[in-house]
Image (cartoon, rainbow, N blue to C red; front, side, top):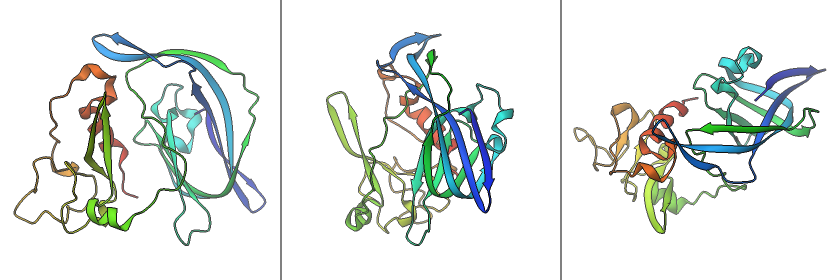
Amino acid sequence: MDDIRQETLGERHDLIIDFRELHHPTPPELVEQDGVLAEHVRGEAIPHRVQFLDVAIKFLEGEFTDLKTASPDHPSRTLLGMLTWQLTGDVHPSYRLFNASADADLWFSAKMYVAEETGTPIEPVDFIRTHSPAPPLPEGLVSRSPTRYRRFGGDPVTIHVGQRTFHKRLLIGSLDEQPDQRPDVDAVLNLGEESSKWVVPPAKTTSECDRRAEKGCLLWQPYYSQVGAGTMNPANAIRWAACMVRVV
């Protein structure tokens, strides 16, 4: 991201975000750097500007309060994605930025947004990165099945490794609506503040695969690290999960 700034036009409060999108027509090349698997990325940095209209700031912290003071390679400038949602009763949808810094945070609602040209030229990029970004999520509304939530407590994840498929491997999210019985999945990682409802003291867990982030580390099966770059490793995934989850 290049800049985040606020503008006031009469009674309307707007938020403007300038950023450059990484576009690489060819897949990154898997390389080894200092004994670690990495990706060699070649492509273009395409400039974009998005203006959110009639904004109400709910959370603004860290480097996002004055992004210009952050160095060009500061983690807060790396935009990983944006989450948007609109709950029943909300007048406008809400938006939240996700970036590589644990300190920078921006959460707001807006009536609408418009895309604008920045006039900045497209620049070539060529760099090495030690992580593999997750594929983009499909656009559209997320269905909420009462039957599935009663059974799983959320959305079970299917993992594809080569030609092999593993169903119900991990439950992600929605533990605030967890059932009284343990979800029908292989492993549960509870990143919330409350203990899992199916864990009855003095027992700490009902499965050796279940963990709470606040109660210690996770255990995982032996992992073949040469199948991808750094963040494909479960250890790194857990480290990032601990950094990214925040109570609001």
